[in-house]
Length: 275
Image (cartoon, one colour):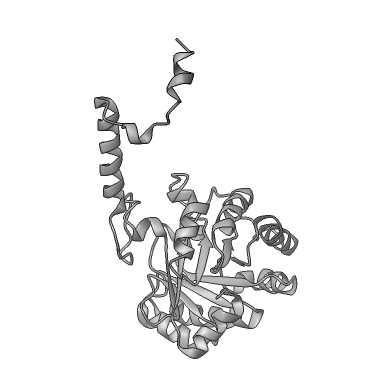
């Protein structure tokens, strides 16, 4: 069944946990989609896991659109959510609507995600009024890495936790259909989840969220530059891939690949005419 913003809302009321993963290309999107995931995020995490950047800040709207188009072709059932990159919605409400619209019109996104609480409420309202669903993002918001002084857990004090709860309620009131909660104490995430009627999607925010999301390279062991505490590796494909590629290189060097079964044939009579 096709996942939509409505099925996300219904899942919370039915007590059904939602699953999301990132994807950035057709092949991986197809595999993830066929595994019955509820949503796929074309995250600005591509800056780190695809481009090799130290953070997400250099990602552009054009890059998100490019990768969204590829993912959309591979995913028939998952809800397609595109990240709004740094400075694509900060400069003005008009810019926010314009860039969100491009992600839907050119990329094929079915929703967009942006980071922040009360500081982005005007943008959230405007994008929603433009008939584009918005997913919020609170807590450890990667686009604020410089302001935070690094990738640090948020909401650890009473004041900070209360602000997160207040921001979550404000995002719901502004029209967001769900909220990602990243890098916050599990008990705080539980309070937020109970405080709003829209689903919360956790990443490093405990099991009481209405759903979970991970970067697929992290959970499959394909990105080992840094492994966050909240990541569970369900496989170590990085090592398996290195082993397979190493075997390929070895067989090529020794003349063992390709074998006859990998080669195409020509009729012997036709071949004789070539000599």
